[in-house]
Length: 520
Image (cartoon, rainbow, N blue to C red; front, side, top):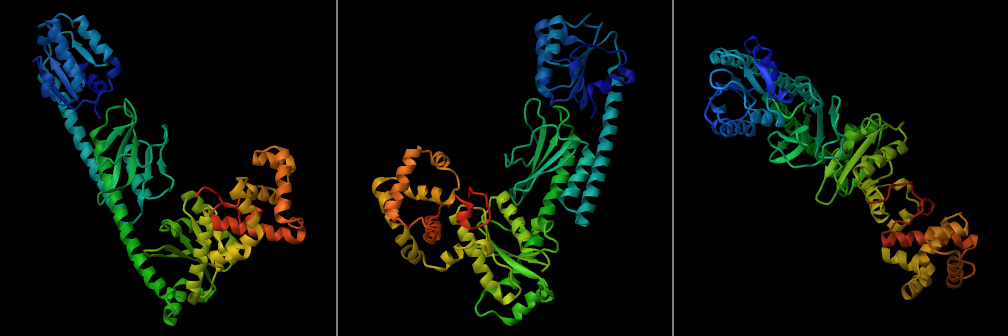
């Protein structure tokens, strides 16, 4: 980018003095133009370095109109020849240029505008040629990276080296962390902002960021942000960003095509295993492809949201992990295959963290080693997902469900008739009639080892109120309800009640499951 400051370094401009607007010497110069008419600004597009004999500066009003128009249209600077029409630049014009940071230059004697124009425009032509050569080199490197399937990070690295400015890449497809290259000084750009099919400066005045969205088939899938050095954006930055974003869009198309092929292959492997009866040849084929006949195991994950990225995200966390995906109109599942030496708890921890970060409820089955048990594993994962939904957690492992496995096996009406009604029926009817939260009180008393004072504070009631409720619980449930022999029955009945109500039981020990993050 050629600036006014660069122009002043040229030998032909050594005699020019900066009269006003020295803070604007960083303005970009796109062309040199000679002009004298008062309404010259109407014929400019911004970035012009204006040369004038001073003809329009003889009258103050006309001079202010002339210079004000140049400032408003975004001209780079004005250089005035002193001596032929004016002896000095009028003071009001100097004040206007200084207030607007508009470079105002003065030549103390007549100069040949032809020589000045030729010198600067030759620089601009040479720079434009270098920019085109650099752009062609950038395009070549981007094409080579695409052919080598080096991925989006490599494409961003090429753009970063070409611009020399910090980059921020943010995907709109998932919640992956952004890719940041260079010392990013500002705050994080907004996620999922307005789609920009052409680069647009954003972030204040002057703008701090240049944003362009990666658009595939009319849908924005990601955004690239460039941290700006100045308010003026060089044309080469626009062109380089446009080339890089086009390459990233091609990479998305390639990945999407690969995902489609892999999904079709996975569907061909998995769908026959979910039918009844299971085709023996299909089972043997999957066992061979997945390595189950070599001692590997698999577990099934069923999600309430997309699991497309699950295998890719978990591979670095679980050694030797392979994932197969199947998406139907009713559900999305992933079959995770891993070495028998890898603890199942490691897979569960990685999946639990993934589900919490993605805020996607996921259920995980027991590990299996035979392909003909796939339908059973899917049922287990679906049950774990149902518990996750009812307990308002992000993740549940079927192997850690405890009593929930029994609840899943029973019809909800039978579970209520056989367990909830006989044990908690008197409390529920009293609650409905009098409005006292006795079930919550019972939970707090059973599941807490704290003092009565702490329990009362937890329930946000006074101690006398708590004592009254405890006496009422004894009266409604019977004197033997809190004995060791009946305590387990009470806890299981409360667990069943919360399960049927679809609410969080509120205590990890009562739920009998691994800690999970509430908030679904």
